[in-house]
Image (cartoon, rainbow, N blue to C red; front, side):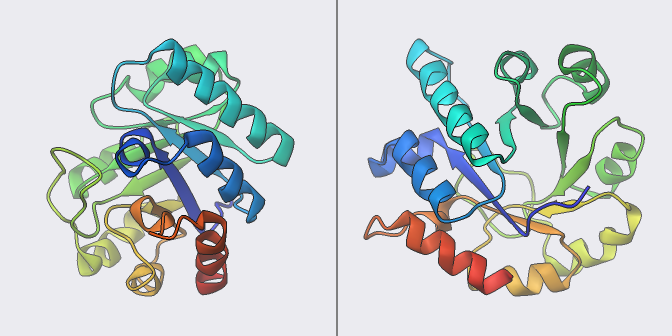
Amino acid sequence: MILPRLYPILDSGILARRGISIISAADQILSAGAQILQFRHKGHVTRQTLTEMEAVAKLCREASIPFVVNDRADLAKMLDAALHLGQDDLPPDAARRVVGMETLIGFSTHNEAQLRAAQQEPVNYLALGPVFGTSSKENPDPVVGVKEFQRLRPLTTRPLVAIGGITRANAAEVLAAGADSVAVIGDLFPEDGSIAARVREWTSLIA
């Protein structure tokens, strides 16, 4: 598979802290031409959360792009969505039994041992990070760094997403280190609220 160079992530916690509507953010990201969109929600899934996920999934279907659910195989199955798993989530082989063999699955890794082990997992792409320090997680894993990312890149032939602290200022060096795609969270949301303009800036920068 070929991943888009820009991998936007809607983190519900970050959006709530910034007072940004999830659905509005998704609409702006997609209107600016994003080719994939992940929804990440680390808290309890309420009815409102599910309603928001359903709305974003609908927007992604209308745009004919993959909608990716973070962590939850059951919700990915319910929404006919792709799935992204972390090291503490349902193991990929078990998740496959929930979502089926045709569903796109990504899997996060944080070091050499995890990246090597992930080679045996039934997933479509891998992520590695945090490449830089990040504030999007309460207890982030140790920083990988660009040099280590570059050293580890040859360990997998699968598409590899760089994640963690990636901004417009450092994205080029991460891509040069071998990343197929960069996952972006905080730097998607400028202070002036023009998310679509920021996504277009990102797309132009890393095209």
